[in-house]
Length: 395
Image (cartoon, rainbow, N blue to C red; front, side, top):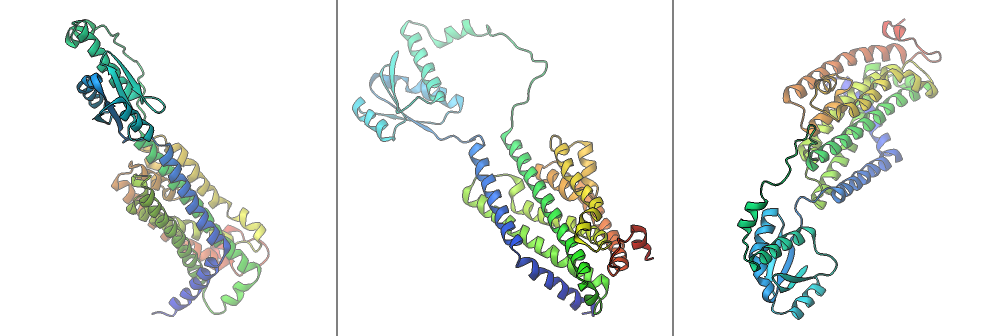
């Protein structure tokens, strides 16, 4: 092990312990888990039920003649029903009152009576009406085939010039979960990027950096700080991701790719790439100032890129597969947020993801050199703000 590794480890360990003991980490982690849990429960409650529960329908006396047609109509309409024969009206009514029977059909086939607790389910009522209609036609000597031969073909044919696509609950769920993923990554990148810049400025303002750099190189201090804070962010997102998987498994509320184990691991990976990119940039710019009041203005150029990536989410979300969406999701400043969104919606192709990762890694490599140079040239210059050109050249 080289001499620089223990020093970087000690700096990273200091940052990890400092952040883990903070109230912001504990409260923030709990808050994110609670919000995600509420979101999953609300999604489950508001999403259309694709597998409705069956209705129990009992027939008694002559009304039992309606059963064959009723079953056929219910099956054709996709209505889930359980049909039973009931001994008498009294027993059937008692079952309705007890909740073991949803509908009791009695009376004659042409004039039945439906007994329910509240109202007859609409799909059950439609199937029952069709069965009664056929019974009445048969009573006057008409068959359904005869009537159909007269009725068929009399409907007006409508040709819509602008047909509206039917709503797809699955697609809506994918878009909503993708939006949640993008927002979570945006918030996490901004939060932990700001921790890096605040830590750099705080050490300059208290002159602690002068003591630290007496025993280590600036690159070691910067590397330890970025690694330590990054690992804390990784831990927090891992906890939130694991909690999300547990909530989904317990509630069975969401069955979307965006909340699967592989997707959660992918989101954590995008956080790490995005954090390294933005943390290095935040550290380089924060090193040029010596007061916390100046940190925000110093890091504004990087914050603009991060906010722009967030705003692009709402331009990409309506059409994640468009050429514009593909292009901006590959660009390094926006890839961690926008590409993760397109992956969650299933619109990102493998080559696009691979290209975005390659560009991110290359950008991080370049930023490591630039940020290390600017940090080393600025971190010991206390007082007046260091110009970017001076920070880079070392004058």
